Image (cartoon, rainbow, N blue to C red; front, top):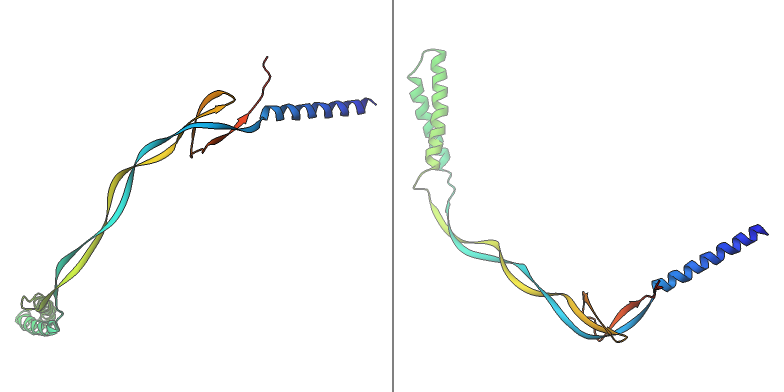
Length: 173
């Protein structure tokens, strides 16, 4: 019996807590909106734009004359190398002169100012950010009336003609 009394007491206590929390939690109603004034904020906006222009580009036409310059330079370099050294030293001088002359001959024929060139017009582009400032609505200052009392709040969006409000009742001690 004592155990049954404890269980009933616990159930009654829990039920009264639930009902008191429900009363504290309140209920919802609607208030009349008297005014909703927009709140503006200024923001900086980036607007990427592509800028393009025409540019003259000079191209050097590829030439096969490099081989001729390399061969001629090698022959001249080998002949000059032949004049130095004796025995194996002479062979080394000929080889070094041939290689050095071939490299110089190839480089000279590649940098020949008489090499044909042509010019084209090519379009070049880049993206550039342009900035401007804009005013945007950041929320609303709302003035509303509920049960004859005037209240103020800030909302993220326009509330319309009515504003949903939460009504709570708490005991006054």
